[in-house]
Length: 283
Image (cartoon, rainbow, N blue to C red; front, side, top):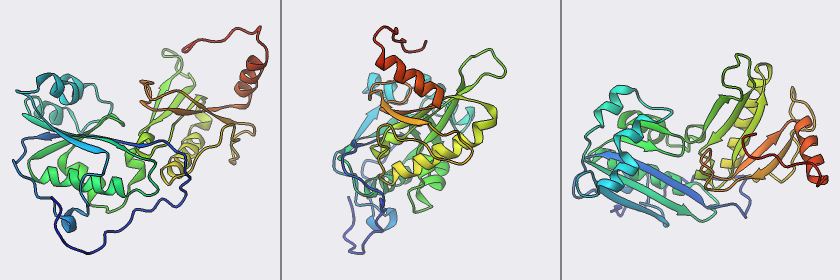
């Protein structure tokens, strides 16, 4: 429960906000053994409490076994892309409880919902929590590491809420082009980003481009359908298309596919010529 201090909390602005985005989606899982009553000090945790639309569910490994396993089971933790090390995962093998902080905020014009959620998570860590799982970026933090990364900075820490993943398009080929894509933009009600065919000589520029889009989206910008990429070092004619849905397992979100000029031309030709067979996903 928030205290009664009247001092105004700092607003986390969203200076590029444009209406018409999707809802911001929050899901954090805090693992530990929690005190029966948690006192959320508004001033200490810089939080107005859990945002409207977000719900906190307390799960016991013993009483709600199926739901607990779904969110915080040991096998789930072992599959994470990023974690604080095997010792952290092993130490959570028998953790007795978790708090699932989950819900959506309607097309927010500022990031106060994120500020308030971070404050609540920090409070939960001070009342028995030992680790935080962010399934949107597939990352597990120890409580101390999470606080340093998100709470102590007193700012949105945009790039720590989103991850850029990469994988080879041809698994066994040493010089295979890469597929780069993000996860985590759904926290801001914006689509994730995807680009395939990234060669070694363009990797650094593509990462810079993705980071520009991440920051712009987090601050409220919409990517228009068909937008062309104009960035020094990248070829002219690269374009953006909105694809996917919230059930896509690669993103758990909609996404924007960024195409190289040749790929764009092939797509447009396919769309114009009904005789050209459509490619299936993964071909």
